[in-house]
Picture 1 (tube, rainbow over the protein chains, first blue to last red):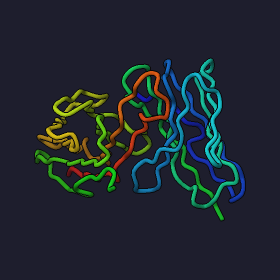
Picture 2: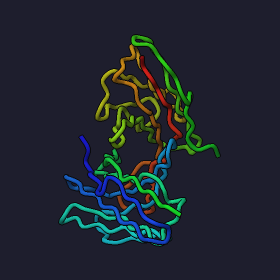
Picture 3: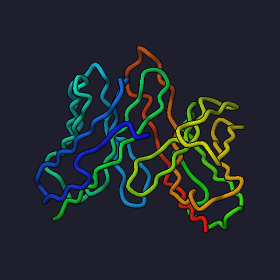
Picture 4: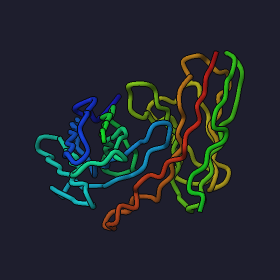
Amino acid sequence: SQQGEEDPQALSIQEGENATMNCSYKTSINNLQWYRQNSGRGLVHLILIRSNEREKHSGRLRVTLDTSKKSSSLLITASRAADTASYFCATANTGFQKLVFGTGTRLLVSP
Amino acid sequence: NAGVTQTPKFRVLKTGQSMTLLCAQDMNHEYMYWYRQDPGMGLRLIHYSVGEGTTAKGEVPDGYNVSRLKKQNFLLGLESAAPSQTSVYFCASSYPFVPGQGGGQETQYFGPGTRLLVL
């Protein structure tokens, strides 16, 4: 069964705007990861945040994690057309790193 | 480095036929994984391996078998294909998670995928 549920399922914005997508999960985790998938391609790792971290940055990406609410958000600032892709959160429980993926958010950034 | 490669890229099978999907990685990763991705759903883990000669079942293992005879290769077999196995299959690999070590070494690296159509 899916661990994570992303919200919204689809998001359409203009270049330069910020994009925020959310992920909720069900069980305790060791870490939460965000991946990007361009159409017809494999997934690419974006960022990992551990359960004892609350916020992490990487370039134009900002990830937050609220373990009390079992939720995470991914913010892409100053979006570009090249950011158009599907974004998935994935959670890893304590112990072995079996990732459980959410259903994804499809982001469309228009020029 | 090629990273993670998958063979073939696309295949059409008839119901009941068998085939093997090959995954190869050149990053010396201990762990390897096979996922399937269906429309509207995230990736679901089929089988995984924590090292050469070892395999384990994931979330949706029925109808699939795997082998990890060499560290760099992970094979996914369909013994008797069914239309329900029409999907996109992704292989991934990673280093093992070591408690106390930071750095995100458990990040998974994905192959480009294999599109399988079972008629």
